[in-house]
Amino acid sequence: MILLDTHTLVWMDQDDIKLGPQSRALIEQNFQTDCVAVSGISFWECALLQSRRRLVLPSEVGQWRGELLANGLIELALDGPIAILSVQLDTEHKDPADRFIAATAIRHGATLITADEKLLAGPPVLKCHDARK
Image (cartoon, rainbow, N blue to C red; front, side):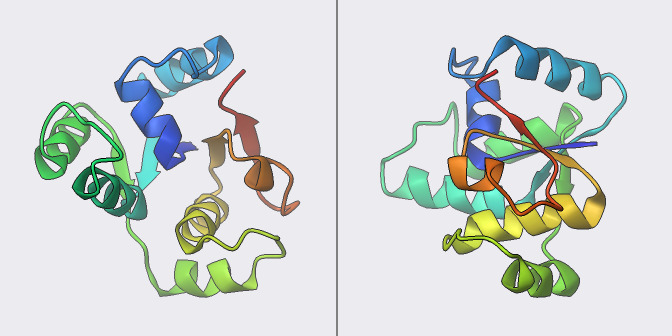
């Protein structure tokens, strides 16, 4: 299973050139086996950015979410163990949303597709793939 970081989800949906060819192929390959997921916190981040006019989505975030899920994207909920793990992570990352996303990937044994340098640098238990590749 792969887990898309919030920016990776947006890049994928908007067919942004920032998403590298290896990452595109990995996402397409995993969509065929129903193994592409996103943390529920990513939709919160998108809603927040849309409300602040820092992100333009093709529709209102709730509708956009529904369309993505209908097309096979899996949403992984933030639960107690993930919340606790996010605090215990050995990382310099201070952003709580990114810590939740990293903990979600670890808890579900997923590879995180991200361009976030701090996440790519660790913690060692987090499997990552650089979204720009």
